[in-house]
Amino acid sequence: MKADAGRRYRLYPTEGQAERLTGWGHTCRWLYNTALEQRQFVWRQRKTTLGVTAQCAHLTEARKDFDWVADLPAQSGQQVLRNLDQAYRNWWNPQHPAGAPTCKRKSARLSVPFPGQAIEVRRLNRRWGVVSLPKVGEVKFRWSRRLGGAVRNAVVSFDGVAWHVGFGIHTGVTTPEAHARPDTVVGVDRGVKVALAMSDGRMWNRTFTTPGQERKLARLKSTAGRQETARRKHGATTSNRARKIRAQVARAEAKVRNRRRDFVMWAANRLCAQHAVVKIERLDIQAMTATAKGTNEKPGTKVRQKAGLNRAILDKGWGLFHTALDNKARTTGTRIARVPAAYTSLRCSRCRYTDRDNRESQAVFRCGSCGYEANADVNAAINVRDAAEVASPLTGRAVRDRNRKASCRPPTQRRPRTALETGVSRR
Ligand SMILES: [Zn+2]
Image (cartoon, rainbow, N blue to C red):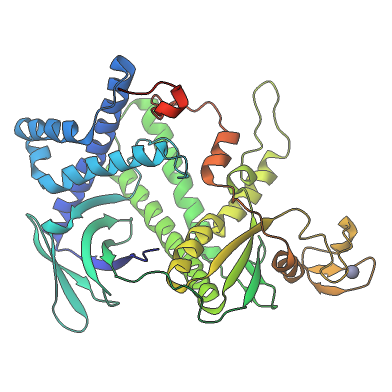
């Protein structure tokens, strides 16, 4: 398997460049959403699929009519349309976990894609490099790590805190046949209290905010909510003050997100470097973090408590940890194995006696049969290490199909059936 990589660097555009890039980011989102709507419309009307070539032709027309569309570099616009096409193909691919493409929200991260032909990367000195982008010219970025291969493309993005440039790198490296340290197996238990507990007794945890930062974020969010309610009530436009608060919320949230990502990547990196096999529980995170709200006729119970647990689970970044493990494993040759999650926290790892009372508290495990005492999370991690592997991992798609609910925007386009499925051969 190829182990190509993405490399992300902090970008330092000048004020003028940043302003222009921001405009392009919004244009890209508009383009993506419009193209998606167009494809959905055409499918509803004519039951045909609008291809990326046709949409690129439409984009050329739109560029003649609107200056602000023409301002976006043509290659970037085409890349947005190709990305949408890829989103559709992922959805149609039964092996791929992606669901139907959805609209990009205004609150989403701004990003502008550039294909490889449109950009050029040059190193200035030990600390700095520049990337030449069409129309804005050279933009400085902090050369914080080596590129490690040929640059294939770039995405410039703004997450509320800072600008970044991400390069798609062709490393020329393939996944090694065997891990450098064969026969090293580790079980990992993901918890709410301690983020990661390993079967060898290690426990990794990190908090991403201080209580003060949490209070500040809560205050900002409540202000933003109040402003939004008032704005809607009076049908007003967003005030500059509300915009400012919103930016502060985005900034605070982005910081937490960055810290979480750093922890998760660090952990995945270490686990894959040190072990030939990493075993984790097969958890259905989407189902686990489903809301307990229920329906109007049948309201759920303990909704607030469940919401708190959901937040705790999502806060630890379990889903991201999965992705990070799978990605890292491609460069180290590690095998990521999924095991059934049932009873791992209640079973004694020494005598396999399983009982609810074994779990003395959140932290302490004491076996009611053999008296084995251990940290509850480490005991669970040992169970994960010793459990038999499940053959087929539960992919995101399987999860979604099982929990499919009526969404506000139902998918309007299904995967075209193959000749095999329809029983009709095309001549
Ligand atoms: Zn026991």
